Amino acid sequence: MKKQLLMYTVIISFLLVCNAFAEEDAPQEKETTFTVSINSAYLGDAEFDDSSGSFSTVNSAVEVTAYNFSVIYENETYSWNNRSDIDFVKGSNTPWNSLQKFGVGYGNRYVFDAKNFLVYFAQASSQFEDAITGDSITLAGLVGYNYAFSPNFVVTIGVVAGYNPLDWNVLPILGFQYSYDEWVVKLAFPVSNVAYRFSDSFALRVDIGLESGVYQLSSSSDVAKNGYVKKREAKVSLFADWECMENITFSFGPQYVFARRMKFYTSAHNRTGSAEDISDTWGVTANVNIEF
Image (cartoon, rainbow, N blue to C red; front, side, top):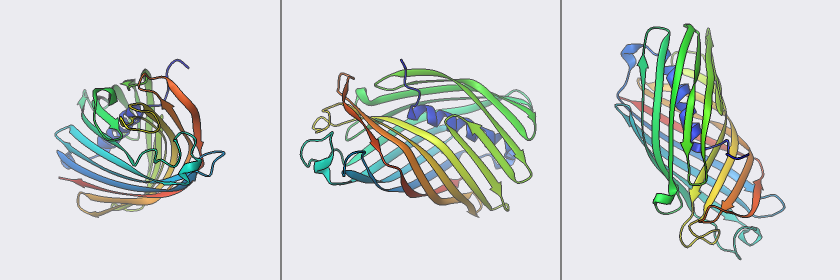
């Protein structure tokens, strides 16, 4: 393939489309101008194929949205085991301690009438080991047209474009939301979910999605100096969503992570070493969302 299909920025874009579905269903009087979302996740130990080398991760993230502008920061901390048996690093050196992301974005929608509205979004971010540089910048943008065939059935079509240090992409958007009684189904690529609401304050939700990201490594990296690691994985998550107070929602649940792989690139964007497949693992995640 000339272009890689999966990009972390594309995932963010599709998540925005899914969120737009939810906003369309929300009462106008509940519209908010300021939101804080805090997320933490732990993934258990997972081995590299044909190796006893392994790692576990703790991911922490905070996103602040105000008047359609957003700022996000993520930090994924790694704990390594049997480092001497890891192929892509010399001796028993640590490949990296953490991978980070900092991004800013803007998203909004334009409502034509009760059945038609447009969503649009743009984001600039940096994904890096220890420093933001011009060579770690990622860009993404989307435009999506939404049509409500009925109050319970909405279809989205559009286009998303993304750029990261290794490649760029232009992809079509296709998704839909269907609700029936207490069920809500949102299907889009690469993130979909199904939810059932037991009451105004409690729901269960299953998320299925693919994630990918390109991170620039440090100038002293033993993997590739000023090079890149490209990560890919799929996740299935079961969430309990509890609106414990007005405008405060707490989500918690287990995750199963599979189809994991890492690829490595030099600072000149050339592949180095072999792709590393990673075993499946379980984890747990929690999120607090506060609206003002």
